[in-house]
Amino acid sequence: MENTLKRALRVLGYVQSTGTQDPHRIAVALVLPLAAVRRDLRALREAGALAEAAAPETAAAANDGAMPPPVLLTPVELALVREGARTLVREGDGTTADGARKVLKRLDRAVGVAEPVAVFVPPTPEAVRQLRWLLQEAIATRRVVALRYRREGENVEVPREVEPLAVFYTADHWSFLAYCRLRQDYRSFRLDHVRDLRLTDAWFQPRQGASLERYIHARKNATAAGGRR
Image 1 (tube, rainbow, N blue to C red):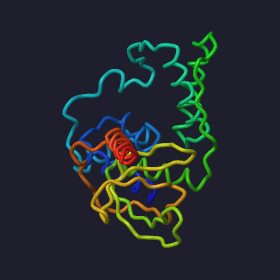
Image 2 (image 1 turned 180 degrees about the vertical axis):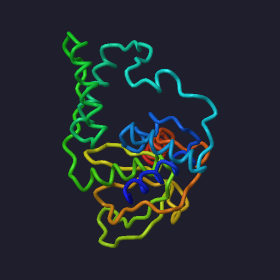
Image 3 (image 1 turned 30 degrees about the vertical axis):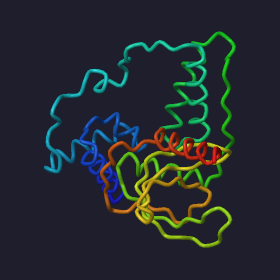
């Protein structure tokens, strides 16, 4: 009963923060079984915690076997999608890995040519993988994250509260971008330098104009400007 209640509260939090009652989106974002999400949504509506959805589910959402419209991909794009599915099979948990495995089987049957692109991401340590999934849940539900962080070359672990924006892999390690309430600015954090990460009960609203692409572009400009001095 406790596990069911905890899951229903996660579903309720996601609906309140995103405004969507689409069970497919919720199941993917929270890494939950679709049938369980539908039961939770029904129970929450019956309890009066949620209003009825503004519009009925589409045929595709109501019928698990329905096929979405076809998507045309170039050979390079298809190879990238396959490599992403392989990464999720290797690194994903639960329904995410199972879903990626099914997608990969379909793509393998569809591809009859040599792959022009190969993307390699080495296996992720279990501790880092758990942190990554917690962060992805925090991003999906807009939850403030509390953690202790040790900067490169330092032994001091500084407590912080952050608003996570994106998780990414670069320069042989996983990192995430977040608005740091301590520094009052966006910062990137290496996952292998994070300690005691947990989701708090506080919610945050996305900050206007913030994105991983803009952060990377600003860092590149700052580096280039420093090199020209």
